[in-house]
Length: 429
Image 1 (cartoon, rainbow, N blue to C red):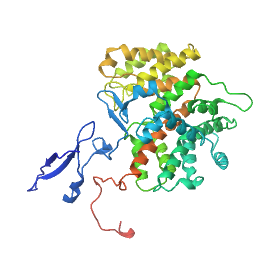
Image 2: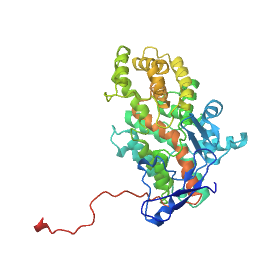
Image 3: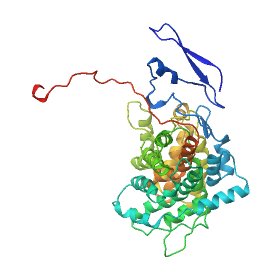
Image 4: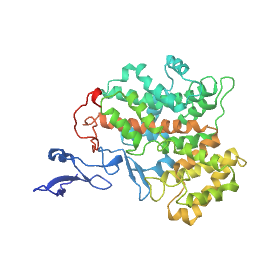
């Protein structure tokens, strides 16, 4: 914080308005415009792209420099030296755990991986061809009907239990939504496995034979979860905070986040990458589509390149590029036409002057799409996996808000409708 002030002069007003300016640890200063309501005015900021809606200590992004920090730690260091559950601990509690703390945390999470057996019956109410994200919205929201003992948001212990349950059960519910869609029996979690291994076991295992999980694929899956764990005040996280500001229970808030993430402009980007590769169809057509992407009059866009926030490079993409190379080598998918297209597009984007000048580098969605496709995960599950990884970020932000001072969210508007007018009886219209 600082004692700096901004002075706002408005036509028609004799006196200027003084607004306090606050400084954070990193990033630009913010002007507190809350006092404007006393003068009968609001600010107008569609999409809230220039508005800090809250104060947070969890994640910091500098898009111009390609920086992503979780509690001060660069994402590259966490991805290379940590794992998903350790990063979960960091996001929730603010510090990296020691060995004993990590073992206790991981053990607690793994002890919550099963879901209430009655919840299994909930799936039969969905159509077999339901989108997995539709199932996730319904089932996660329904958790509040099964776990009444963790709904007291004013109680710190209840919030902790809800956090453990959500982090632990999301992979189980995600895998169940996939198994339901293909008619296979649900696989119970195996708590002897790591978080990522357990997810792959529940996704691809069958009761009639033991699961065989590649360490390379498990490591790549863990990195995908870790690199999607949090991304500051994005649309879904802001939705969770807004829902939580009303005092809604944590399961309902996370379900709201899942719904926001489902949008193609948010969580559906890696799914859009695969649809684009499918549209291109063959390596021989790449030049044609690249030319279309360069044509400003052509509506076609290359998905998975560039980023709305990162104007230089996406720090997460560097890590996933390495993971993608390891997965493709492990699986030997040299003859997969879509993956061949992806690798060629990557080569063009990294060397073509047009892409370099426009900063259209392959982003995290591009590489995660390649990895998930190679592992054998259908595109309809891509956003579900994003939701699994992002759950801890949603919970961390929800917990930060609920445990501090907050008020119910109430955005304002610029009204451009009809002014007040008199009602006209039906027989006179």
